[in-house]
View 1 (cartoon, helix red, strand yellow):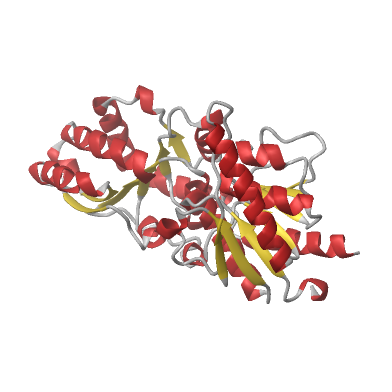
View 2 (cartoon, rainbow, N blue to C red; view 1 turned 135 degrees about the horizontal axis):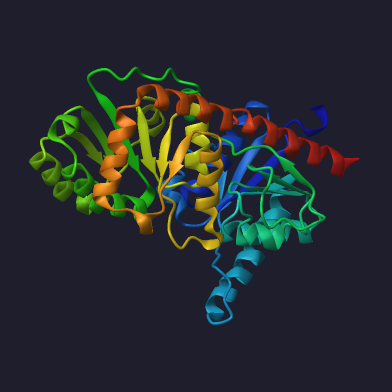
Length: 363
């Protein structure tokens, strides 16, 4: 699109993987199309944003607003002032937000300056920051057609949840035939890693030894839990690879026969693009039950199973796993269903919407 070529586009996202990964995926596509990209986020970007393809990264203060904590409102105000000054200086063609409170000051400031704005909602429930911004922005993009919490007059378009190039490299990876070894992958962020580190050894202890011997386990654990969990698995005679962080997670997903994980939006998107069945244990007490709704959408497609954490018991879960491990045909069918749920062109579709917003505003 010639009128949008070489535009500066600022992406605003909370500094966690769930917000930064879709923003990174969009950034990769925009740069490939000839645009310049800056990032606005918070200090957590140091942990998750090492590979983010931005010319510049602007750190903006933010916090979850609360009348009980006046300091949080003050942080939001200073974040807004900082973002507004940056936007005046940089003059971007559009600002795109990906949720999380660090995206709120930049999007609000851009709207107040008359700069075109787009927000993307990764989950099936509109997040609190995006919900407050949805009436002010020029377009709302989403991963799910039935996104909950949209204002009636929102200019909404389903794009899917963008995934990074490293995920697309494993797109529709061939499902490995289950022969002698069953590759099981377990991960789930910091809270998920803690739960699975405590729970999964109890599950495997309830399994027959012959079945445990067939499993090659890859599991994400918190650094402080790795040695304890490894000792428990060694006592059970299991083969495992435990790490606090896997830099090659897309390849690990592609090599698995089954995934056990939380159901954050990026996890669901990556499982759908790569095509792997999953047992999903949504983060309990999540705001608006967004992870539960994400998981239910994936399960309705025939791609996985939802297991609420509060109902899990080691013996029952071991029996459930045993049934799945014995059903190679069913797992392969679920992997195919996962692909039907995935949207590998989500970043391209979101980039189209962003460029359309730029062009529309310039007419």
